[in-house]
Amino acid sequence: MKINELTIKSFHAGLMKKDFSAFEAVREFLNTIKEKDSDIKAFLSVLADRVLAQANEVDIDIARGDDIGMLAGIPLAIKDNILINGEQATAGSRLLENYTASYDATVISKLKKEKAVFLGKTNLDEFAMGSSTENSGFFPTRNPYDLERVPGGSSGGSAAAVAGGMALGALGSDTGGSIRQPAGFCGVVGLKPTYGAVSRYGLIALASSLDQIGPFAKTVEDAEILFNAIHGKDSMDATTVESESETSNLKLENCLVGLPKEYFAGGLDRETEKRISEAIQELKNLGVRFKEISLPHTKYALSVYYIILPAEASSNLARFDGVRYSRIADLRRPNAELRGKRKSALDDIYFNQRGAGFGLETKRRILLGTFVLSHGYYDAYYAKAQKVRRLIKEDFDRAFDSSGEGVDLIFAPTSPTLPFRIGEKANDPLSMYLSDIFTIPVNLAGLPGISIPTRNYAEQNSGTSAELRGSLRESASLPVGFQLIGKPFHESDLFEIGKAYESATRH
Amino acid sequence: MPLINEKTLEYLGQLARIDLSGMDEEKMLADLQSILSYFEELKEVNTENIEPMAGGTIRKNIFREDDFDSGLRESAPGRRSSAPVEAFPEKEGGFLKVPQIFG
Image (spheres, each protein chain N blue to C red):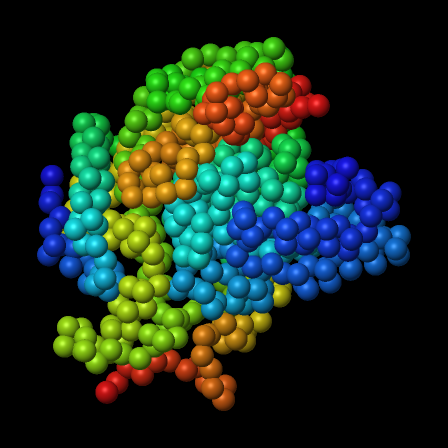
């Protein structure tokens, strides 16, 4: 088996048996990136020299007979809005093209302590705003399953890197689905942890009441290994808490899973619907019981999200003023022609740098956020959205309520559609926003959610699928993910049931 | 429903410190308008006596030593005080260089 087809667990075993060295493994990954990434374009930067030196250190530890952990030497890809000391961190924005991080994000220090190695920084929609990675200020990333299609977003680069065999695992950030949706589109596992489970220190903030960092991996078990390495209380992020439980008490045979009727009320495309029902059937075969539940405020989640997110983003992105962090060099002088229009030369710099540095979607959301927070509209939009947000959260509380007929987990599709074509939704922001309809409520309620690829039966019987007409064959070969949503800080429940599904459906 | 017109857009650009010239303003107005129309559905939700939810944070006070840099020491051992200076886009002779704003 090729090294880049291994999982974290089998890589570790290979390393211990000396089947290959960490250095050789990293070199193979760098070769794969060289070979494939000119098409896929998952990486914004590749840290070739640094990563080989890191791998070398792991080999020295092994040669010395030191005990090495599960993540030692594991080649990872990191979304470019997470800071690695001394490396670029653009957040996908032209405005930060020349910014070099001056410290490690907490998740990075934790992974460095485990001796994981970092292959590179991955592409994203600018400041993590988008569902296709087309809003990157640099270039779009392509789906490794079909280069004409998007990998999802905003963490599309991280998802594509893992799916394309260019990293064993990756980190992304999820504000409204930015880990789970691209994981679903690229056929990998993606976890959005509970709000407060993972420190955001060193993550370039988008919407602070929603953002979480989480892992991408090939298997649920690998996602669990990465989550266990990065979670925990951090004094640098006051929202973090010690997680309650590390191991799950949930057993397949007594697991009750809720199916929210609002998520299945039409709106799924045919192939997605088929694969989602097959996944439900697989879980039933394993002894999992399902029960229909209602989350009545689901339909308002999109509106609530697109008020709260732009409001918080417009405030968080105010720090990018073109004076600190990074600036567009040829715009650093005040423009004499505009002097009459602006109050000061300083204002002139802000307007020019932000005007030229931010992309269209970023501007759209900053303007929208500024509007919903502005005098006279605050109560009608922002305050109203915060109230409905509570109602959405209370829907989940009721569904999980263990004093009654509460469920242990909730099952949902990850996305209503298959990965769409590049450019298909680029000019219609609302239809783009709708691709996160099943992931957004989870962020609003602060819950953990994992996207797991459904088993692809059509692919396994490729003999028959070759007979099918072109379009059918095409859609049948694209990945579809399903989502498991858990109680706060019950990530272990997601892993438990996810691993059971995986071992029953993978060979 | 509030209508966003060109004047509102101009004002929002001023508040957000973004130069809007060179942008397709008509398309931006139409997009913002259709997004705001979508939000109209929130009016039908009864939110009387509902407390706004400001975030997912567990609302419990978190304390630390009242000491200038204990927070930094605890979890960011690698952080150097010179780091913000190093990260600054332009420097000269140990000074931070900022664009000319007078004259």
